[in-house]
Length: 140
Image (tube, rainbow, N blue to C red; front, side, top):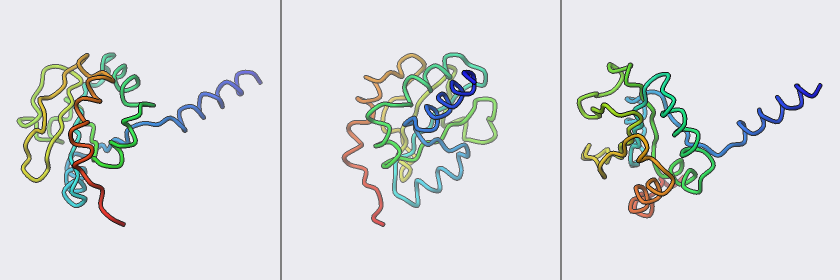
């Protein structure tokens, strides 16, 4: 009984956690970003990487900037091992995870990428701040 109670509690934490709504298909994310006139956030991760998992859980859940990213940007997560699923020459990296912020109109990086442990709450706030007020969500 106690086990079931703990399991239900953990499930509710995960269900109600505030997290980035990552897409898994680069091409669909790019099309959606174009259609909605939003910036594209690209996170390149490596399968079975402890660092990637750590940063995903510590920096992309339950922070004040998450809602703004979800509202004003399109986020996509791609795996290094899935090289054919995204333009690897554009998002080339040897450090995982790596975070890119892209203007979809010009297909130019808005900032220098953030690599590995550079991805922290403080650096993410600084990284996204200049663009959050400029990028507008479409009117419904």
